[in-house]
Structures are given as structure tokens and as C-alpha cells.
Image (tube, rainbow, N blue to C red; front, side, top):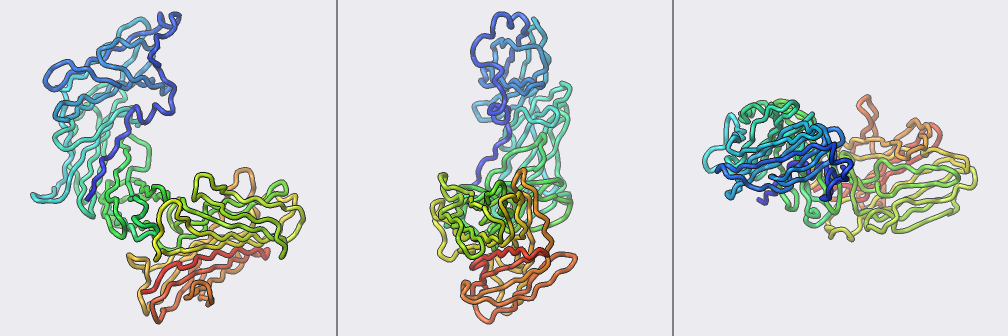
Amino acid sequence: MKHTRRRVLTAAAAVAAAAPALLAGAAPPAAAASADGTLTVTTVNRSGADVVVHGISVIDSATGALAQVDSGVATPLPPGRYRVGTKIQEPDITDTLAGTIVTVRAGVATPVTFDARQGRELKVGLDDPPGPGSLYTQELLASICDGGVAFTGTTNAPGKLFVIPDASVGATLGYGSVWTAPGDVIEVVGGEALTAPPVASVDLATLGTVNTEVRRGPWSGNGGVAPGVSPSAPGCMQWASGDVRQTDGPYRVAYHLSMGDWNWFYGGGVAAWSADRTVREGETSTLVFNGAVSGPVRYLPWTSKGTLGFFTAGLYADPVLDGRDLSVKADVALYRGSTLVASRKGLGNSTDSAVRTFYGPVRTSAWYTLKAHAVRSETVAPLRPDRLSTAVDAAFRFHAGPGSKAVAPGWLTRFVPAGLDFENSAAPGTDTPVRLTLDRTSTQAGVPMWPSTVRKVEVFASPDGGGSWRPLTVTHTTAGWSALLPAQASPTSVSLSARVTDTGGNTAVTTVYRAFTVR
């Protein structure tokens, strides 16, 4: 198992890119210098020797401006309240995390001493810890925060991470621990006053479990990505969780997590997907990446000032998760009646230079049809020959004119088949229910949604890659729309198509070829 070290938010990482520099290495103007105070940070290691630490973070809590200073140097600063944080590392890679909040006054020298000998060991344990010979490895994480914002932090192994207590007003300690074994992760977070001993015991019964599946994706090697997990809400204990596995799916990982909101991010050069889950004590749920029936989502055509626009990068996306593939290659055509008005090939996001938005003229009030056909491009990663969702179509028919300013009426369809296995296959001889999510989202800023009410939903399935289509039974209940694919007599691939008609006669057709297979 490959284990990637996690990264805690540090002051430099969290603030430097966005905040103005408090110090730029040059002396401040003489006029301003007389109004400054000074800050000198002294750092002492666990052996009692003064040591020089570079890059100590000093953050103006009012403006967020960041300075990175060296210990032992009197640094001029404007009067104000400052967050000061760093870690003192020993030759054996033991870390002592230190942070405090100080007030700098004009003309006053302010000393801060971080003495690693005062550090207390961070201990986070389980009420039922893994026994001898266990494959679990543990990593500790700690952040020092002010107002819920981390301004310094680090990670290390048990016995190698200490925290210096501090009584400054507003300073708190956020901590976490991750136990990792093949197919299993225990990830917990907590918080204390920075004056409290950094010791915690976690009751496993208070955790929730999210069984995360990474199924076999369309790319060879999954494009080198794996899901990372971190707390959703900004707060003291927030970090980017390392990938548990960097291997080809399919595989499963059970995440046992503290109660609260968590985010899964699965991304790389081929896709960017995310999911949020609320974890509750004792509850178990399932989250699937690389699920079946990737297809068009969210983006609908719009008209404004005599022009029609359509964003093509949403033609390939997971039907459940947020995000989209980064390999779309699309051809789009606009018709007025049966007359071709405009067309363009090679749109999408499969290369950095690809144009993502199609534009066509709307010079006459008439019925228009926009047709988009997309495939995944191998410019981002090699594709599997046995991949699913080999091609997708989206077609919209609606009335528009040169004065129209609206997102066109129409509803995309997301297909979510139930009962598929780890290979996104349905069992032979078994009916397959398919949940239908009708998707109509306002995605164009400043362009209103044209009213549209669904009148009819029709769904079709093809066992031969779109050569022939058979209607499916469609059901509408208070729970939503669904279709039922009857049991297939022999192994095959199934393509799906849905046509949604609204009360104004506008239609939208969503088609996914080789949506899933039957074993």
C-alpha cells in the first residue's frame, strides 16, 4: 500500500498567496518606522539550546497580511494584534508546534519565547486500539488557530509531535489522527483549549462509516487519482487528506469518521469530482466513484442578443457527484427547422487550447434544434477498450428569436441504475431499476430561466449500441421518476436514452451509449 503524507494548512500555505506581504525584506520608510514596535521570537529546542528557526509566520489578525521572520531577529511591525506560529524540529524529526497571539505597541519591544521543553506530547488513541501485528499505521495532525482559522500546523508520527500550551486569548488547538490499513481508514478530528493537555481517547462506537467504492473507470490506471477525505467546514482542524491508494480500481475503502460534515475529492488530470456527506454516530453509508452512466449534466443552451450559447464541458459527468470529466471532445450543430445554421467540431475541455462554448446566430423567430455529440479524448490519459459511456448525445428543441434572453426550456436526464456490481454490471436474469434525475439548472449569469414544466418522460434502451431502441416502462411517484429495464437473456451492453417533453412542446433528449453492461 502506498501511503501519501497529509498536509496540514500552515500559515504560509493558507495566507501567502492571497495576502499582501507584511514585510518584503526591505526596511520600512523612516516616517513609518517611528510608529512601529518590534517583535523578537526566541526558539529553544528540547535539549534547552537556542536554535534558529526560519520562516516563522507572523499574521496581522486584522488584515491577514503575512510576514515570515527568523527567530532571534527584532522585526519592526505596525501596532496591532498578531498571530505567531512555527514548529521547532529536532534532529530526530520530532516536532514541537508553537503558537501564540500577541499585541505589538508603538515603540515597544515585544518578546516571544517558544521553548520546546514545555511541549506536551499529542496523544490521540482509540478505546479499542489495533493489536500487535496490526497493519494500521497512525499519523497525528495538529493546528493552532485563532477564531477557527488555522495559522500554523504540522503532522507527524505518534511520539514525535508535541504542542506548547499557550494562554493567549483566542488561541485554540485542533487535532486529528488517521489510522490507515489496506482497505480501512479511521480518521478523527477534535479541538481543545491550547492550555489543555493534548490527549484524547476516541470511542469507536461514536464514529460513522462511509464505505467508499472506486470502480473501474474509463481510463487505464484511473489517471493516477484516488479519493482524499477532509472535513468540509472551515475550521481549526482542516487538512488535505492524502490518497489512500494510487492504484487502478476497482477497490473499496471503509472510512470511519468523526461525526460532522466531510468532503471527498477525487481528481487529477482526467476528472474532478467531489461529494459531501454528513457522518452520524453509528451510521453506515456508501459512496461510489467511477459509477455507471456518465453523461450530460447541468448545462443547457441559452439565448441572448441574437446569439445562442452552449457550454460543452458538462457533456461528461457523474450522474450523482459534483464535478465533471476533463476529457470532453464535442461536435455541436444548430438547426433552424431542418436548416443547418452553424456547427463546430472539437469543442470541450480535452486540451488546454480547446474552445468550450459553442455559439450560433438566432436571427429569426423559429423552432431551433441544438445537437451535441461527445466522446472522451485520449489526449489526457489512455482509455480502456472496454470502457463504459463510450459516447453521449444531447439534443434540445425549443422556440427562440433574436430578442430572446433566456436559458432554453428543456430538461437533461441523469440515469442512476440500481444493483450494479463492482464492474458496473447488472446481474443476468434480473430487472434493473433506473432512477431518473431531471436536471434543469440556472448556469448562465444574468440570463433568466425560461419557464418549463415536464409533461412527459420517455426512456429507451438499446442492446446493440444504438442500432435499435426499445421503450421502457416509466413511473412517476412522489419520490421522482424511474424506468425499469427488463432482465436480459444474455450478456450485453445497454445504452440509454430519455426524451423529456414539457407543456410548451419543447424537448430535450439525453443519450448515453454503452451505459452499463449485463454479465
